[in-house]
Amino acid sequence: NAGVTQTPKFRVLKTGQSMTLLCAQDMNHEYMYWYRQDPGMGLRLIHYSVGEGTTAKGEVPDGYNVSRLKKQNFLLGLESAAPSQTSVYFCASSSELATDTQYFGPGTRLTVL
Amino acid sequence: SQKIEQNSEALNIQEGKTATLTCNYTNYSPAYLQWYRQDPGRGPVFLLLIRENEKEKRKERLKVTFDTTLKQSLFHITASQPADSATYLCALDMWYSSASKIIFGSGTRLSIRP
Image (cartoon, rainbow over the protein chains, first blue to last red):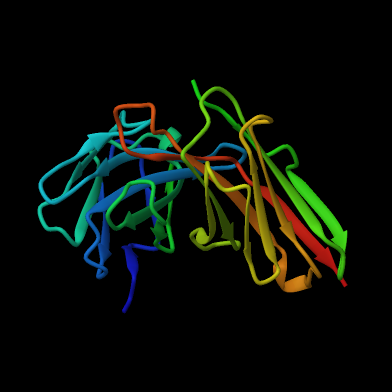
């Protein structure tokens, strides 16, 4: 059981470039989330999904898009990266309830120059 | 809007003492409140969940209390050890919003010195 995995672990982008972060979970969880974590600001929810084929906006969705084509995968896309998107990105999943225990991936450290 | 305050950015205590971390929230009392541990360079790991109708929850050396009158949760680590050094996050659910999600505090960095 790998739990929640994220790829890549590190990435450096130039302003305007695009990229996709991949999150995978093998726990058959319905709910999946993307957070960003910045110093002093805690974890902020970007987008989330309550099931395959569904997505919804979180607290800070601007500049990001997501897709959940398969239940086990949740993709986060940056179409045109900006320095303000430099952050550590965490994916998480939970089972039946959104307020249930969340299982987090190891994170992706993204730097936008 | 709901806000969470973990009122100590950092806490340093002597090994063997009890560490007490505070989580305060404004506005709506959550149905659930959770505590997570985060080590440097890693994702948060769930520790304990306490429901609004529970006053106290224990797990080994960990204890969480929940006071909806004070709008506060306390997280205690008894007989603290250097291995307990980490950042601890509280999180609460936003049941009153149309979205099903939880929000996190910014965390308290706990250091246990030998």
